[in-house]
Amino acid sequence: MLKNKENISSLDHESRLDQGDHDAIRLWLRLLTCTNMIEGALRTRLREAFGTTLPRFDFMAQLARVPEGLTMGELSRRMMVSGGNVSGIASQLEREGLIHRAPLPNNRRTFCVKLSPEGEHRFAEMAEAHEQWVVELLGHLTHDDHQRLMSTLKQVKSGIAESLE
Amino acid sequence: MLKNKENISSLDHESRLDQGDHDAIRLWLRLLTCTNMIEGALRTRLREAFGTTLPRFDFMAQLARVPEGLTMGELSRRMMVSGGNVSGIASQLEREGLIHRAPLPNNRRTFCVKLSPEGEHRFAEMAEAHEQWVVELLGHLTHDDHQRLMSTLKQVKSGIAESLE
Image 1 (tube, one colour):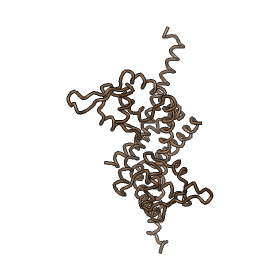
Image 2 (cartoon, chains in turn blue, cyan; image 1 turned 135 degrees about the horizontal axis):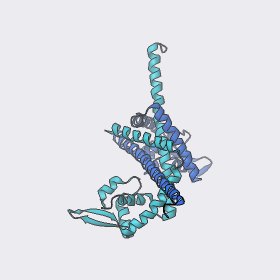
Image 3 (cartoon, each protein chain N blue to C red; image 1 turned 180 degrees about the vertical axis):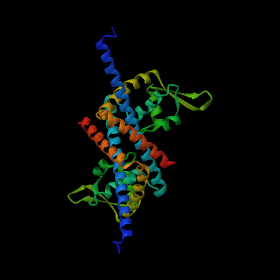
Image 4 (cartoon, each protein chain N blue to C red; image 1 turned 60 degrees about the vertical axis):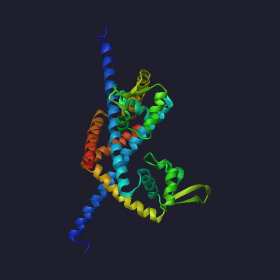
């Protein structure tokens, strides 16, 4: 009975699905491994070269992109790496004179955060080294592999966004 | 003077490098975004469906792969996701009866951790759902795109490993 046509085809379907599942998990773990390796290298180098952390760098990078400043809520939403307490980082960087916090003119209960001139200067130095490290870590791909990877990851991104809708 | 041959060629070289740098950063941020989106979706679903966290799931997943058990040090090294305190997770899971801890026979100061039968059962349920979610999130790629992505990420991995040597 197990050998009739319907059962064989349903078995094929099952094995294909299992194979597919397994593949998706392998892809996810490979993606995660690559990301973790790069993140780990950047964390180590930022600590060794600048005595700073990746969340602090990320915090300053978000501000460097928006010279008019960001609210704390907006900053939290934009942070790319985990492991940082956003308000703790803000207090540290403020004490070190690298950022300024000021209430918004139209809503004095909301604070707007900006890099100070010293913070801009310090960030520019770190960003240059960071860019060089990322080139070292990822720059070995050929131009074609790089372009294909960018385009496949774009598909991955839209696929994820669709499945989250 | 800026227009003599040597300066033009060095300018070209510079712009190419800048372009390259910029591209590597864009690739890194895209990789990080995809990873963060998947991780975020898995965190939310594990919480909603099983009232658990990704680090707890990751901890159990590492144990499920090694039925003979792992030491706490080995477990820490194998964890794939951040945000979890490994000894805190071990205490929780032990209280809930999902893992057992016992001193190693040859070294009574080192503890070996294993899933309990209840832990194996609970993990199997979560792993099935987790696999299904990962298929939903990543399964939309064509077979060819999937294969190419796996192979390019393998190159990325070895390139990173080489640049870390």
